[in-house]
Each structure stands twice: as C-alpha cells, then as structure tokens.
Image (cartoon, rainbow, N blue to C red; front, top):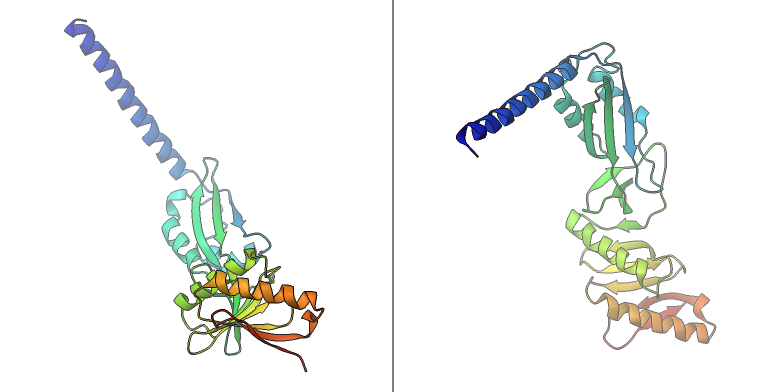
Length: 245
C-alpha cells in the first residue's frame, strides 16, 4: 500500500470521527434545548413493601419546578433534584434524566425493611445495614420485631440471627421477635409457637438451634410441647426449660 493510499484512509477516518463527534454534540445540544413536555415517576418497591407513593414526592418535585411545562432542559437542576430526593427517608436511590421527546423520568428505588424496631414509644423499620427509617403512612409489612438494640452494629448482628433462623428447620417461619439486653444477650421468640428462647450471645447458632430442635422433638413425642413456656440453650450439652403453670 502506497503512502498516498494510507493517507487517504487516515483522512477518511478522521473525517468520519470529526463528523460523528459534531453530530453527537449537535444532537446533545438540541436535546438540552428542547422544552420539557411532562414527567413520569417510577418507584421500584421491594416485594410486599409499597411504602412509598408518588404523592410523597410531590413537594420535592414541585420545589424543583415540576411539571416543568415548556421549560428547557438546561433550566433544570437535575443534580440538585436527585440530591433532594435522596434526602427522603424512604428513598435508597434516585436517578433523573430526560428523554429525546422532552419527558423527564424520575426513577426511585425505595428502601427495603428487614425488621421493625422500637425505640421508646417510636416504631421504625431497619434496613440491611442496620440503619433505621420511619414507617409508611400507606402500607405496613409483617416483619420481626427488634428491641434493645442501640446501634447499627448490634442491629446487623440481630438481622444475621434472624436470617439464620429463617432457614433452620427448628424454626418454621423464623423468629417473630428478638430482644437484646444490656449485656448483649439475646432472647428469641419463634414465630410458630408462643415460648421464649434464652439464646445468649450471637455465637454458635447451629449448636444452639440443634439443641432447640432436639427438645422440640422430645416434647412432641411426649405430647407436651403446647405447655412449653421457655427454654435456655446457653449451656453446653444441655437445655434448661420450663412449662406453663
């Protein structure tokens, strides 16, 4: 291939790249200057947790200028709107952008509750990181109740215990409540029966669950499980329990 052909090929590619870049910049500029014709809100909810509805966002969107009728895209402060949406206590993620046609899309990811928690007289939800957020005015979700948990690290440890109980055959339906005392010892309340389990510290889940499972089998065989008031699985090699008077 002669140098002239190589030069021609390089020149052709350069023209294509420059033309493409110019077209992209022109297209972006045209999109930015187009008037907004409306907006749509999409909320991604965790299963059975429709805590957030579009009306909850009305004041934030209105403050940002919604419905932006005939406003140019360049006049919108999208980063500020996303920042304000993320301040909402029920929102985990927020993304705002406009389509070529001029429709503003507001995409929201709602926080997911893993448990409920009481703090004094206040009830709230707990997320997977141990953070808390308020109850919804529109919906509720049946979740395990946590008490006695002061910080996120303690709540994460409690959530781990709840997750393990959910999949262990000793506890059909998992635990309905979990309490922690000031010494870090847990008391669990199985969902399927009204007794308490003095669990102690969070360690050795499988060993403690196995002891509980064995006791359930023994009491079922003796037809006395309905009378069980509490059991204590903290001691090595044994289970202490008591019946309802």
